[in-house]
Length: 333
Ligand code: NAD
Image (cartoon, rainbow, N blue to C red; front, side, top):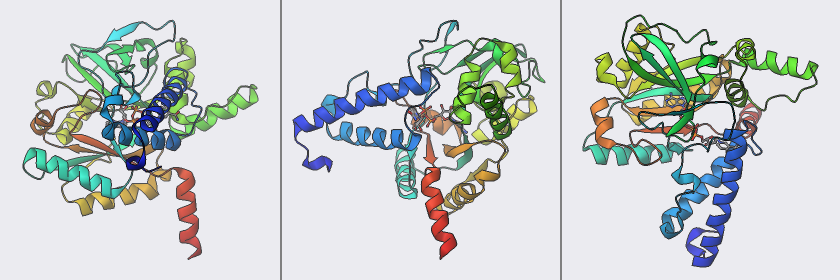
């Protein structure tokens, strides 16, 4: 039903139901690494909740999924880690029109048109890596954004993540741990042979692997990683996101090299169109494109909400099912 036609009571009822349902889906996804609904359904329900809470802000409560990053951590056996700065989520858009609106809002807030660094949105889970004097001392998951889980032993099994940097610096960097498509299909074939339930997708397989307690099992899972963020860019001498990525690489950290700096929406749309089609050819899953204000000073000026940075947005690809239909139509015309 259109939101403007809802009575106050009907809106309150729908908001409470959506908050409750999304919390349940979040527990299955974030804590049990076993989603019970498809991502695009979660995303559609979440977008409806955001729209309702925007019109009826009196029904937003602090427990709402719109006000919280990830989920609580109920898994036993993993130590808790307090993040020095919160690990946030990303706002998302599902159409080029919405992306255009985000660009207009950002331009208005800054007072000028920004350059953007475009990155692929890696379909894995966020991790924070702490290096002291160049040595990896701790790795933790995002958790609820404030407190994560210590996964140091498992992360040390990931070959792409260096245990020693090329420079003896002390820095916390953040990125995405993912399961390459080849590792995922090998793992699920083996699970079938062993009579075990296959993982739903590489993201859940990566999360399930990282959050289990046996480092030997972790080694066999062949996970990989890309680093894309630090809250301490001064340590690198970087003033832009694109330069920070280069510095990560010079330190020996894995980075995805598909990023591009762009300003015009027409170029950004072309980049998105290109990866909407060629994503199948990549060795790892991506679920969208992240558009980030490139100047780090401008990122600081824009700041964050409780849940997301205002200086970045994720454009999410349409679900594969919908894409298959679009491709089928394209083939037949
Ligand atoms: P998100 O995964 O949509 O986006 C934020 C995350 O993107 C960041 O935390 C980071 O880990 C990741 N990321 C990947 N590449 C990045 C890059 N280049 N730069 C910056 N960040 C990058 O947000 P979320 O809060 O982690 O999860 C919400 C999403 O998870 C939903 O949109 C939905 O698709 C899915 N989800 C699904 C269910 C379900 O039941 N199916 C439940 C909960 C969440």
